Amino acid sequence: MNHCFKIVLLLLFSCSGYKIVKNENNFKKYGLKSISIPMFYNQSILPNVTGSFTNAFSRELNTIKNLEIKSPNSTNVDGYFVGIIRSSQTEKNVIKRGLSARIKDIAPLNAPLNENLVPLSNSLVLTLEIYLIRRNASSQSLISRIREKNHPELLNQHPSIILKRLIKIDTNFVREFYDGANSVVNATQYQGTLAKVVEREARKSAIDFKDSVRNVF
Image (cartoon, rainbow, N blue to C red; front, side):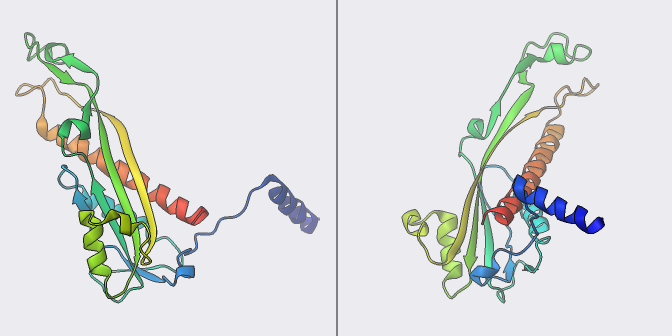
């Protein structure tokens, strides 16, 4: 009876288009059994974003079976996983203002006469470039060219670039305000909120990337 039940389940999964996806190393077919993940390059105008993205991708790639993640500075690897964070060089195009409100409405106790407007929400706009590069004698030169966008037309067909992905990040977040005794808008608190948003988007990007590589690549 149990045997028949298992056969029926297998038939149901086959007919419905479902398949069991294993967390395998799909890079093996390109000869990549080990990679290093150097600290991502920050070409954006935001400080302190590389750590969040580097750590998030390192954690997710570490879960792929039969893919060894070596130290960031290791040269005894089959390939390099390179990430570059880019943005507009104009702040208003990176952190866009959303809805605004008067400070006196946000903090009636401590700023009842303040008519200045502050944004209640913002959106963060970044671009993340991902490259998987086969290690050879010219790898470091190639990575420098990628980082500086030198000869981009050549990079599209470079034989050492196994994978290239462009991840767009455009997400909204709500700012936090406190009607405290000393200040209404706390700049430090805003930076903390922004850091949490970057951390969240880094984690989401890493998970989405791993899933796409596992299912498609």
